[in-house]
View 1 (cartoon, helix red, strand yellow):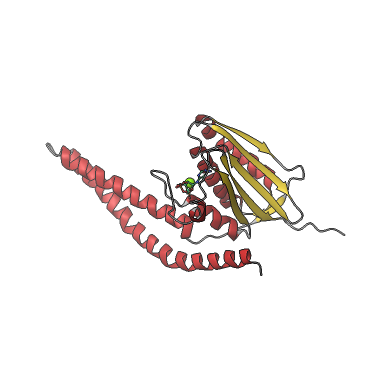
View 2: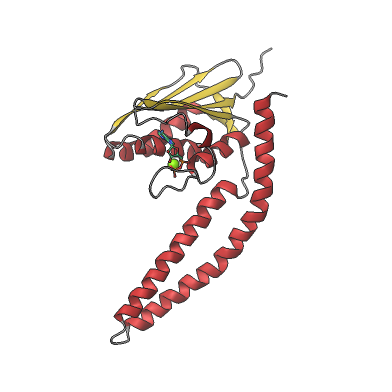
Length: 238
Ligand SMILES: Nc1ncnc2c1ncn2[C@@H]1O[C@H](COP(=O)(O)OP(=O)(O)O)[C@@H](O)[C@H]1O
Ligand SMILES: [Mg+2]
């Protein structure tokens, strides 16, 4: 077995173990959190009727915001490490990319980013869970626009080789220094203020669950290219 394939399987096993334990814990935490949130809401309403209780009410508001933040942290974690049930069906990659672009276009435009596509003439068909795969691609698109604070170009290309389809997402952003490359896909690795560091870890997990592979090349100051490789649906020839 190739090293890349061995590493992919080892990572999936590790995540399955982690996901079972930590996913269970995260769910256990979410129930009491929603009780806390509901009661804080009621408390705020009571305090609103009490004269002179403004500062107590605003404290309860702060607590509610923190509860929301904890909930978000748990949701981000669950989407990375939680149970992932793939329902792959043969999917035309070009169509999927076009759908996603339609959805993403306004956000790119607002960030001053021009979106281009270059789609394979043969429209490769891959076994894909469309929702999860779109989530994986969306993480790359979001990172790309965040890497271009002054605007730029974002290009999505699809190609097909003999047994695999390729999707390239490239940007003309700040690029990634070679010293950061080894840590890029680590869970919780981020250089962004307010970043979760779970985007690329989640994307890699989704792609590897599809028996695919993700790789990256980058030139600091010039831009970055993320490449996804996916197995094609075998074509029957007689
Ligand atoms: N297209 C890109 N251009 C430059 N840096 C990137 C790009 N995509 C990812 N990165 C780097 O990888 C880090 C991890 O990305 P990610 O896992 O999505 O987490 P987050 O977006 O929350 O920081 C980012 O903080 C950034 O430093
Ligand atoms: Mg991200």
